[in-house]
Image (cartoon, rainbow, N blue to C red; front, side):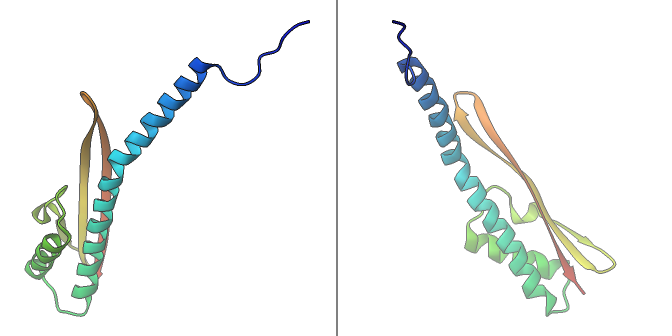
Length: 121
């Protein structure tokens, strides 16, 4: 009578748990990065909404960005690093940055973000 194996072996379970553990650990390391990106996106949108009603210029946009950065406590990108460009329709505000977080030993997780907001005149 031939006996058939049922279920996973101990080694198979250890491998599955190690892979799931690495994925959960990576998620834990990346959640704060994405939460900070939502702060950046919200700050840019609030500046856009604030400046639409006003007759705006680059200095007013910079001042509004500085206030939002202080309130939101954003560290991955500084408010001075945000690009502000004059266009034919108004202004474009772009936050283009990368966030790097350590994973294990000398292995790092890298996330790239790019948020563009247009202020219509």
